[in-house]
Image (cartoon, rainbow, N blue to C red; front, side, top):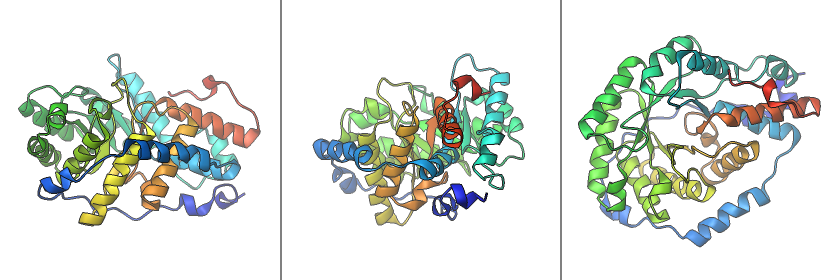
Length: 332
């Protein structure tokens, strides 16, 4: 059995490397032009799961893609080096070997897109992932509230990069958005981008705290103009995290920025994406709104932990016809 027998080849082919977004000057007219028609956005988002379903081999292909675009995450106050090492082991082998063999994917190196941790676990994760090619992402800038002094936020980024983080997930200052202070948001984001150096930066908007779709769209544009490599919905700690309507709004601003600048910016929904059907809905949204390149970890990530267990259970059902207990798919 070859990989193409089970998994559609066109979905599993890797995309080309993406040139990094350098940012641009702040254009306040373009920011002001961003709007959000809530009823139209919700209507379109509601239609996605209703009109698009994937089954059997095609579903398995989408689920493997979801795993490869996952930032496997632990952001708990009781994180320990042992827990992080177990999580890294899972990132390197996210699907049981017998299922990989049954799917015909022995020759494909299936791993998660990254492992995401707090600063003090970066060195542990880097050591555990050595030689795997999996990057370590670190949350920074006073995560999750983002209310520490700006100078400390910049130092925190620099320290995380020095410790080995290849990606930095920053949180913006929400009051800049709520007060319409776009210049301050732009300046803040530019400082974060500069502090990251070669490390890629994901701008967390905390969309559940921004009030309106218009604010979300405008904040997305400002962060992209300031050089964000990704824009991300949430920290996962807010009362409202990733949703399809918010994702549709941000995806369309990514498309508008790409058409305007020629550069591609990534997208990361985080918080509340815990089930297989949710993952497929987000992947379909990316494919329909932005195109095939946004089905690769260079341009799309899930911020998730429990999602992986559900996907692995669905893959076992695809292979065997039976659902297994969750303990058969441990996270570590």
